[in-house]
Image (cartoon, rainbow, N blue to C red):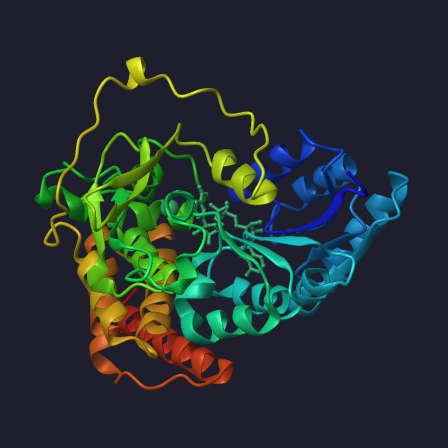
Length: 396
Ligand code: NAD
Ligand code: MG
């Protein structure tokens, strides 16, 4: 192999960012870190820079940049520190970069991820919110630049692995009947409904199978994560919402399935460890060691399946409605959810109120067409205002 591939990791200090760096560090002959970004936990970002010696590091503001730059000099590193969204877009689009891991959480990741798409990079997409918000525009930009889009979300990576190579011809053309999107059901799958008003952020973040950032952990508990993933699957695989069925599978060993018209159902299995989809996407179409131990089927022993209960998980119903409405609806759903989850993590709202905030926000604002990025951000901002108004109306 020639020179190692240059990788930018957006959101390097997060759960996906750290797993990505773990896989990269196992293959120094194949991959080199070009840039790392962090938003909080900047001492951890410094430690990551010392370990990986990137060309660039990106932080949110000038003061933090100055401190990090001084610390990097003191450590004998020539890493240059850049600031804010502009810095993120710069390291996403730099001509020397081969692949960008998009692992910022939430809407904040949209512009940098799109900058990488527009520059024609290989995109390792963990930041599902970016695609949910801007679906049609995002996919248009991918087609226009010829960027290779590889899903990191374990379910979508599983679906990608179970699809034929030419799935872009359309699900009907390649004989796919349905996509079966698996979900663990999260920590509240069996909690008595009456207790849900009293669950804490810590309980919501204690996922039975996966260790993840706090926002996606709450989304997993409410199943909004599965709702966002349904929308994500529709864009990635050009599916209609009715072609994506959610299946609760509490063991999180099957990461999703593809159902073909001849009755074949292909599944991808593995231990619940994000290093598998990360390694798969990094090396695609080759395979590399991810550090994940082999799956022990005898220890797993059984695989269970259940239909999701939309009364227990109203966020799943809201997301399916937004998927069907399309246009500005997914961006509004995502923004209202971001506000509601942040308020829940701050102890300002109760868990069942997350769904109430989103539902009331969506009911207050008509769905409009989104023909450009500005329209996406307008829908996002409107939903944030309405969700904040819900909080002040309820004295939070
Ligand atoms: P995390 O909270 O652990 O990390 C988030 C990263 O984004 C951190 O590096 C943080 O510094 C950065 N960040 C946060 N706010 C920012 C802002 N406003 N501007 C710039 N950077 C900011 O989250 P995570 O669990 O690693 O998830 C990251 C993304 O990957 C999310 O979109 C999530 O849905 C997706 N994802 C995560 C997992 C998982 O197992 N953790 C699985 C599938 C998909
Ligand atoms: Mg997932």
